Structures are given as structure tokens and as C-alpha cells.
Length: 331
Ligand code: NDP
Image 1 (spheres, protein in one colour):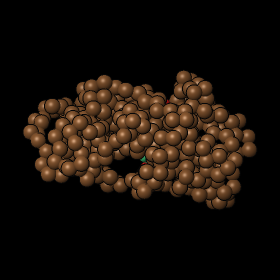
Image 2 (cartoon, rainbow, N blue to C red; image 1 turned 90 degrees about the horizontal axis):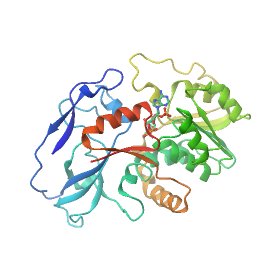
Image 3 (cartoon, helix red, strand yellow; image 1 turned 30 degrees about the vertical axis):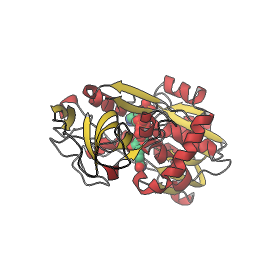
Image 4 (cartoon, helix red, strand yellow; image 1 turned 180 degrees about the vertical axis):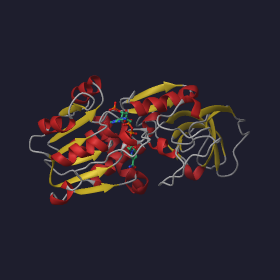
């Protein structure tokens, strides 16, 4: 069976040649407390770019000449765990390979009657919880708030749009790259206004979309987006620092917002967070999001790339904006 190794640490944009497909032998069974899983879906996520660098962070770097890992869904083909039968669908952390021997403590059986399995990598999984945590716990949205979300057409951003509306936002503004994404944000995903950051002057477009300013900014992008949001944020505004994808491939330190001082006079709360500290919210979120899915207020939007041989393409595509919604690979 195949697995993908990192063979060189990318400089700037990751290249195919930084990765290698390796043949591995499939274990012939599962020991006590283990599950042998045939992966059917795997996730590619922006945080993986950070793990390709050899730097100390909140999550350990990937090792060279070893399989990458990350969120995956698969079918149990051998079980050493009473209560998890062969045939169960599980969510676990050993993606980037066709077969995985998974410690049961890191696996979660998913309920495919609520949504198809890959939804647990996106709208009902880590990205969904990231959006929910950001707008309920880190920068809580209050009734009547004007909310701005960058990276709005992605996995986290689309859910953030729904959460903002559900928390009572009076106006939700999104930004994304390209006319098609911006059109879909407004026509299909319920945003009140959308900004194409490749086309428009961010600050001007944001001021036009929110003439009285914004109360909450959900930051997936950093840099110029954070700068524009600081310019337009009102007194006592709240900012959830979720990601800074505009900087992940940077080889030089990028100029940061030069107007961070505005946060002082306006008494802005600006909080960074990592979703793994907030899994206590997961059950509550899945119950909530499942209801929103049923009612049609949340969409399970994802882009599927087929085959482990194209997993690196999927990852590269994610970083350059090929996806709307969650990018997943079908194995
Ligand atoms: P997405 O589905 O949003 O995919 C990434 C998107 O980023 C692309 O589709 C692209 O869309 C956009 N993008 C790429 N380069 C740029 C750029 N230079 N400027 C603006 N946008 C860019 O990924 P996720 O939803 O999984 O993640 C979104 C953000 O949330 C990331 O920053 C990620 O690191 C962060 N995150 C943080 C977590 C936490 O615990 N704090 C947990 C999970 C995610 P476009 O076409 O619009 O450019």
C-alpha cells in the first residue's frame, strides 16, 4: 500500500519533489487496543505547511523520510478493540497513507447517518470546531454585531459565516480570492457582502461594506487583512487570530500590520487560539452543526481530489486557493 513521505523541507511554495510516494507493507492484523484501518478519505490542512518546517511550534514538525500524518477517515478492517467492529467508520490522525494501524485512543467512530464521512474532516470536524470556538469563545459575536471573516470561502471560513449569523450578527462580510468565490459567498452561502481581495483595495472595500465599522474580525489570513480590519474596527471590537495563511509560504518575514496601536485606543480584544485546546466544545458543536445542516443553514461544501497520488496536488491547491469549502482527498 502507498504512503506519502516528506523528503525535503519546502522553501516557499511546496513542490512535488519535496514529497515521495513509498510502498509500505500492510500489517497483517491489529493488536490489542489497535485498529487496522483502510483509509477512504484524508484531509489536507494549512497547518501542515508549518509542520513541514523544522521549527518549534505548538505541534511537532514532520520528520523527513517518514510518512506525513493528519486527519483521515477509514473503514476498520481488523479490530483489537471490543466495541469497535470491522466495518466501522473511524476518524483518526494517520492520514497520507492507504492503510493505518491506529491506537484506539486516537480514533473516534463517526455517525454517517448525520452526514457523509468526509464531513467529519470539515464541517463536522476540526475546521468546523475552529470556526465555532473562534466566534463563541475567543471573539464572541453578540446580537447586532457586524462581523468580518477573511478566508471566507474555505473550510473554516464558511462555517464561521453560519456561526456568526446564528449568534445574531446583523451583517456578515467575507473576503476571498476571485469573482466566483465572492459571488458564491453572497448568492449561496448567506454572506451579506463579499470582497475579492485580489481585485479590490481591502480597506476601501471593507469601509464600503461596513460603513459604521466592524465589531468582530475572524482572521484566517493575517497581514494586509489584519491591517484593514484594525483600521475599520470599532471601540471594544474583538479579533480572533485563527490563522495567517498569507504568510505560510513566505521566505522573508512579511511586514506585519503597522497599525496594531489602534487596538489600544479602541480597547480591542485580539486573541490567538489553537483549536486543540477547545475540544470540550466538540460535542456541543457537532450537535449544533448537525441541526444546522438538517435545517439547511450550514452547507457541507467540499472539493474532492481523487487518489493518494494526487494528495500533494490537493495540498498545493489548498495553499493557492483551488478549493471552496473543505479540501479532501478520496483514497
Ligand atoms: P481553507 O479551506 O480556507 O483553505 C485555504 C485558503 O486560503 C485557500 O482556499 C485560499 O483561498 C486562501 N489563501 C491562500 N493564500 C492566501 C493569501 N495569500 N491571502 C488570502 N487568502 C489566501 O483552509 P482552512 O479553512 O482549513 O484554514 C483556514 C485558516 O484557519 C488557515 O489560516 C489555518 O491555518 C487556520 N486554522 C487555524 C486553526 C487554529 O486552531 N487556530 C485550526 C484550523 C485552521 P482564496 O481563494 O480565498 O485565496
